[in-house]
Image (cartoon, rainbow over all chains, first blue to last red):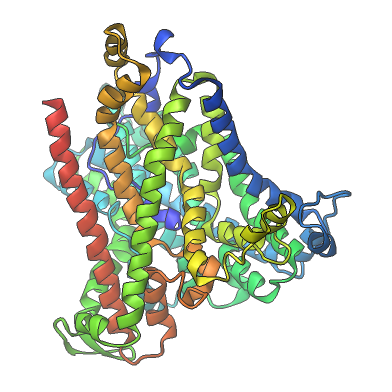
Length: 303
Length: 299
């Protein structure tokens, strides 16, 4: 978070091993009798409901009319209407915000993953002491609360003419994702046998060919983890676009939402639609890539 | 890999990282030690900007209040995640069939933007049409149907509880991963020796979870000290109502971008530096204690 941004990145000096592997295959049946019986089951599913119901209410209310929401706060969308979506998407400018968020996030993740993969490969394989030093430098970024540097970043952007620029925001996010990406990817590159490169070199492959044709395909699962996991905090980030963007046509979703909420605080159904529009890509991402997200969340923990 | 080739591979990442992360971080500190007139940097100011934080209004009232809210936020989160969250993780661990599904459900709010979560709960808790108060009234708890976010006494607790609601899937997930690392032979052996589930948990599992709890606590601390987007969604940049939901990051934002003070850059940079020292110091101290504990349990 945005906060999610930095918080999910473990300030950890611990060595990382992919967790799921360590956990698998050690599960004797006897010790795994459900602890706590039926009461515990009720607690677990009850809390699952508490976690989910507010999000379901958000979706359900977005398919209702404003008048309906006010007269019957506990009602259901019968019949459902998409009017609020049409309103948010067109007059509420969410189409613009959505496009901006998508462009900035996808661009940042692509740049960040590309440069971090190259760097991680060199850091994992380089023998010179300078690579150890560079690796510590990058990993120190895991500990830096980058949001606290917003003021110098603002003046840096001002000097570079990047204020109110989606490209600037994209580069900023790409840079801030580098430590986490390098942290995960160096671990994976180190697990690959060096014989692979030696064989490639014997066959006359250049460093770049070895990297691109042989090593990158082998770390594809880690690339997926890094890309998917970085997507979330960038998509959700609020402070950078709040400070670095000026005009509404450049806003990303969180700032656009704030803008919309400020002007339409009583148009509840349209606000609900805006909340859903902002959230939908993450829910979709979570459903198709649960494994990668969980791996990212636990990356700093595994020992 | 040859050294020169390696450096070519590292160069793009290093350039981006240096320009957009390292350079701003380093200058952020230097800003705090100079006098500022608007955007013009004056002479070296020593600790003057820091003194301002403790002697001049509005800092003298806003900073202690905001810091108190950050601390409450941290303590509240810690309390709930290490009792309720840990219990949930432990109960889940013995249910391999429903575990993945439930972990996913718990983690769902964690992925949603804090801005969305803040507005969502603002609407759900609305005194006029919010479903929460309507439900409370329907089941005969009219006295509980309060203007939760309008009253300074309750607003901060709403922010804290909503944040815990959003965050808790994360510790549950990490505790789950840590439980996977507790050797089954140990708890198994204890049970063979006649220990109950409860005894096995408190005497064996829990002590082995301390490193995980420690790591999660450090992350929670950083998260709590940086809280910005969620309180912004609830109370705007001024922490409405009446500063009841103010946090240090909001105060920093107001000072830097909204205050109009001529030395705004100096004092807000001092505030950022102070917050950084709190975060870094706290995280560093906790990690040091943790390492010592780890050496003890592995020795």
